[in-house]
Length: 274
Image 1 (spheres, one colour):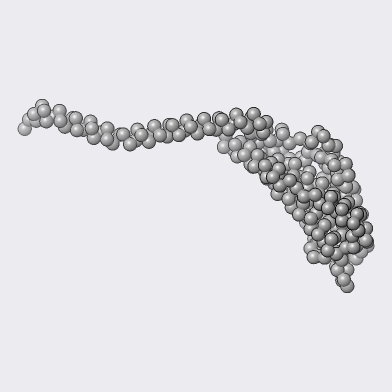
Image 2 (cartoon, rainbow, N blue to C red; image 1 turned 180 degrees about the vertical axis):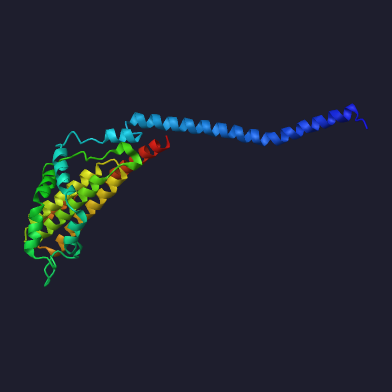
């Protein structure tokens, strides 16, 4: 059976139209994806340019390079490093357990039970005296409005080691014990000075361009505020004490902390993706 030329041409034409009908959606999708990818690349390039123009860190390497002590304040990096070296030689968990009851007590002056629970006053005083060199560094930090660059390599991105924050948290234990010791002795001015040290350390930690630093900073600010609240509740404070206590707490600039955390997360994410 022979097919007429006209019928053959019709079949070829229909096959061609059918092929175009099948190919058209795929061509459209491919064209859409090309446009979208081009637009995404243009958007990323524009954002990168804007970040560079603002002088903000783009990568984890930029973040690490940007983390430097404030040039307008005394650089106490060496002093902080010496204190961290002393703390690193201690068993942090053991030190916290020794006086966990002190730190967890709801009141600073508990009557008739002593505020230091099953630890004698002499033991607590000896504990505070033992760690006086560490406390002295953070007292100087507050007194001189100092700053420091903690030993944290932010260029490692998600693998950055924040051991320095873990060590510095133990200093908070020492400061809390010392503050409560001063309060027990009726030395409100000295206790307020310790609270000022805690706030200064919170500020120091908040200067780390990292979400870890921001969260730890907020926790430190919370510790100083809880001690201040307990002093107002349990202690006989003069007007001068109240004024100095308010200055010692001096809460954080939450907007600035949040901005620093977002910038650091963006830089780390960009480095990991690129």
